[in-house]
Amino acid sequence: MVDEAVKFMGLDLSLTSTGYSCDGDKGAIAVKKKGVERLAAIRDEVMLICREHRPDVVLVEGYAYSSRAGQAHSIGELGGVIRLALYENNYIFIEVPPACRAKFATGRGNASKSEVVSAISARTGLVWEGKGADDMCDAWILEQMGRTRFGLSEDEWPKVNLEALEKIDWSHVVRKHNEL
Image (cartoon, rainbow, N blue to C red; front, side, top):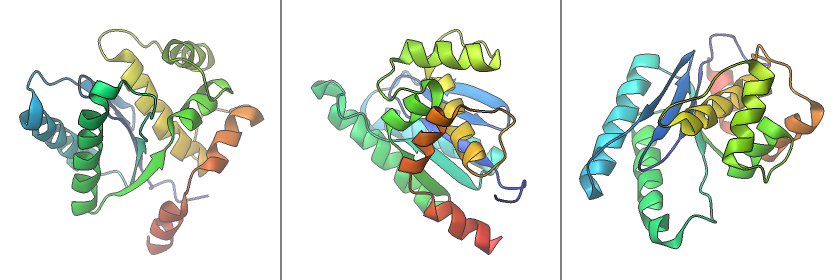
């Protein structure tokens, strides 16, 4: 368990709609720009949100290796830019594989985006709608994974869902907690 002052933030990186969730604030960052300008704009928005919320730990969804080949390089660039910005600004970040996020939400690692949103809505009563809804939901799940792993969640999760937490390297959070 960690101190209740420890704050977790979830980030679901996307070129069209980066989802974020921290302390009840959820949203999606949509940028109309292209290329390097888009990467810089998303980075700037993410860092603005980080400065506003001051999370101790950011959970970032890992790369989906089944992504369409044409977008794999661009998504990789975004992931690298965001991870570097988090590192340079002294934010601890944890990589969460997409299958772990899906398993935590539904009990199955291969659940589709719509199955994930439906499962979370059914479990929590939260409604996810509008542009970027699935990205916001994924970010919320990532935040909840951190909160749940360290005993801070307000929700109870079935054992099969909790198994997803065992596949994540939490050592950075433990070290951070020991410093607090």
